[in-house]
Image (cartoon, rainbow, N blue to C red; front, side, top):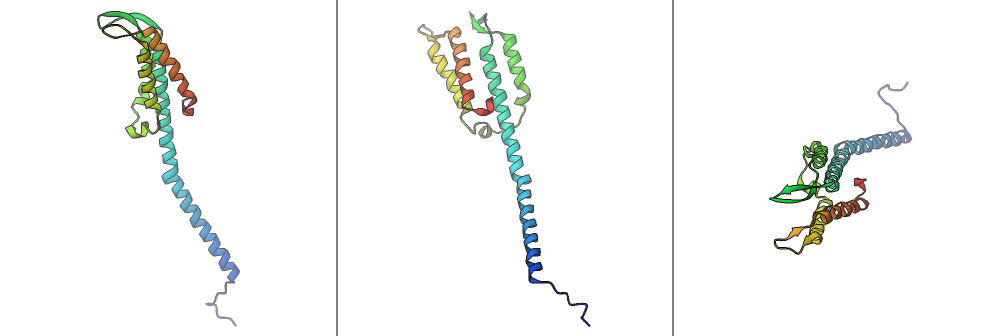
Length: 158
């Protein structure tokens, strides 16, 4: 009669069991990394892209507003219609409350390129007068057109 305390496990069964345990441990580690690291990073990246898309849309909207004669700095000049500008900025306000660090928003060159477009268009639209005056009817369409070209470079803007 066999001793009931002796349990025999074949080598094959032992190998299969160890393999299954190893696979379960590896899957647990991978799933843990997925939920702890990858998914939060993806969520943050999506939040950053949504913020920059909203910012871009707001800025380009403001530069596309119809120009009307307005008094600014004691001069009558063509400027974007105030109601239109307000609508453009109101659409961005909910995104402005997102808590992002500056380095997160500047993780690519979009903001810098937007600033460059505005500066370049301003330089192109400066009239040779003293004091220097910007030709607003040239400046605003220039910015609007040049900003629109950035959409091809940054796919998340579409």
